[in-house]
Image (cartoon, rainbow, N blue to C red; front, side, top):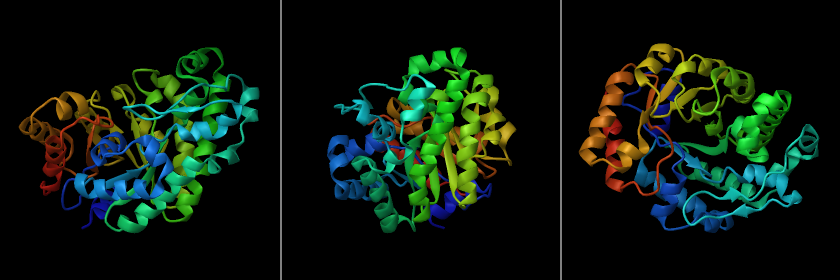
Length: 345
């Protein structure tokens, strides 16, 4: 079986010939390892394609995430006409310089069609198509985005957006729903061209930031909207949410997403108890405490422990608890993957 076939079988709650394994994103690590920058890749599609293909073969994850780290450009595409700029960092992903949506009237000023006009977004989409053409038969190739709740907070600003959960819940609902429509608009051309999965990171919907009731009201309906659309197109939906969500595990079933990748704070045994046989899930080796700071032997032991607890019955993917720091050693990253690649059911 190819890596793509292995992880798709897990998505469908099957038990492939080995444990599926992937990073989530991995853009910062790949860019550093390749010896380039976000700013350079934003201007050079050919180099972005070569970086993705080269690093895919080196890392050996079952999923290749094109555009990892470029998610803020999806908000920038609609707000640059209002004076918002992008700031490139020496280390870390590019970020917005301002937030310009504060009322429902501001939402009405946003043009959803601008998402497909931004040159960097166009370049990432083109790179996604070309990477799929080159290695899509071997690996599952996707493009990354923020989840609707997180993207909404990018337009508004995280702190004021959190306050609006209490002060203006109708505004929050409208903004998040708008972002779901925006992301569907973004993915539609790629899905029409054969991309098989959406990759959604929704960190602002973290269990450390919003409570279960807020998640169910504000984040879940928009995720369900995206996953329902994806299902109608025969496409998978990969979801990651940061923080401890052990108190709302059943809520992930309501999102309709294909798979949920858990943060290291989540009790993975409890996750298996709630979701096993109902929804594919992945987790949750700590990216900093283990992958960055431990020895290769300790990484191996941590990976084996997660698999023993949660991954022996299929419908499971070995994943770090979040995106990985760019300073993780290749030895530790290789060990992480080797455990799964060599684990036969």
